[in-house]
Amino acid sequence: MFRKLGHVLLIVALVASVGGHWAVLQSVAWTNMLAGNLHEVSVTEAFEKTFDGQHPCRLCKAISAGKKSEKKSELPMPLKKIEFVSEQPAFIFAAPQNFRMVSDSRFSPADFSSPPPVPPPRQLPG
Image (cartoon, rainbow, N blue to C red; front, side, top):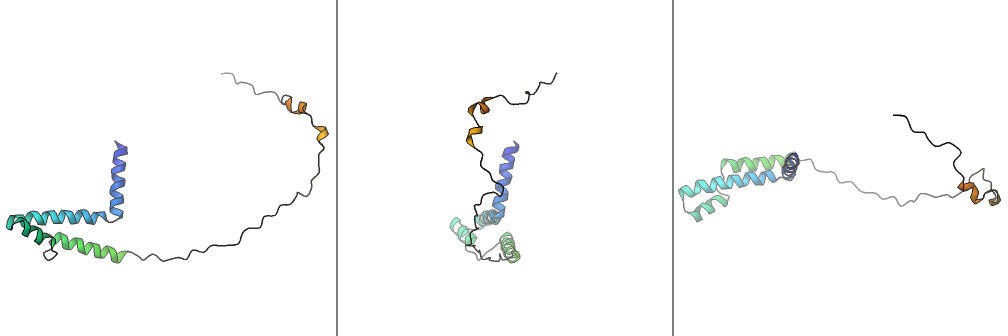
C-alpha cells in the first residue's frame, strides 16, 4: 500500500519537475473549451475554434502567463569550464630505513603447525 503510494508520489514529482503540470492543465483547458464549443457549433468548427489559438479561454491565458513567469524566474546556469590536470603523481618506491634480512634457516614448517600460545576463549555460563 505505502509502496504504491510512494511510486505514485514519485511519478507526480517527476512530471511536475519537467513541467508536465502545464501539459495536464492545458489538456483540461482544451477539453473544457471543446465541450463548450460543441454546444454552440458543429464538431469541425468546434475543433478549429478550440485549437486555432485565436480564441483562448481564461484558463489558457492563465497557463500562458504561468509559463512565462516560470521562465523568467529561472536563473541561468553558469557554464563552468572543466579543467583536467595532466600531471600524474610521482610514485617513489623506496626500501624502509631499518631493514634487515632474516635468514630462512630459523623457520621450519613445524613453527606454523603448532597451536596458538593462548588458550581458546571460554564459553560464558548462561
